[in-house]
Length: 269
Image (cartoon, rainbow, N blue to C red; front, side, top):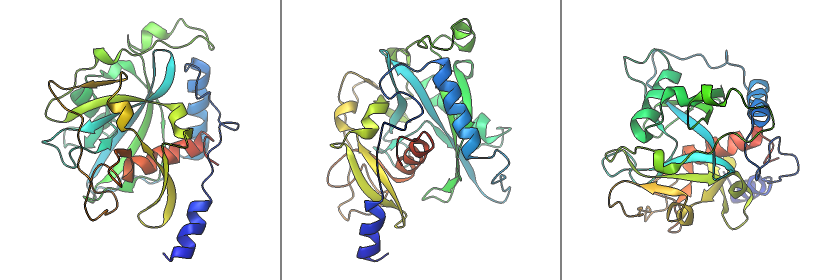
């Protein structure tokens, strides 16, 4: 893409909270979860992009949750023994032969990586299209809300009562796969100091979100004696390392999926 076209594409990015279909600061409720569910259903047909048995597949979970009454999304920083260690990602991984579906794989991997049980997960939908990772896996993104005490424990709540907050200390991180898990507030998706404009795969504009201070702050948990560290690619190649210019960012495929979801929720125009 030429420099002129790149500049034009990046200029088209526009964050705005005024049109968002959910509050970026008030706790998520049944009503807001239903709004997310409906937006996903309107934006993406579940019959689209049927799973090709000739491809290798992976699945991730985009886990919405309240933490200390603040709405956000749970992410992780990959552990040292995992592909792309030190990079930010959603919980998830490769679909195994024993997984009956891509959704089952996302739930299994989430349980293995951060200790969230399937009965805590309320699936709100999925979006797409599913993109290929740099390793060639077709990655299916599912969206969910995490109920700390299980879905049934929240059934008595009315539509506008804040859903229970997740205690990050309750997570059980896999030391092999996850170095850190952290809560990214939805409001961070509009913070000018955090946002950086990139082109996904050199063509599609999106926002990456800088998160190093969040991972180092109180809304994060860590494996035993794990220090917050990451490696940046000296050549500044796209999607390689923790981010650009020394930053730790939600970028690459994870950043593209986060940006795509925020567009569905009208956080970005």
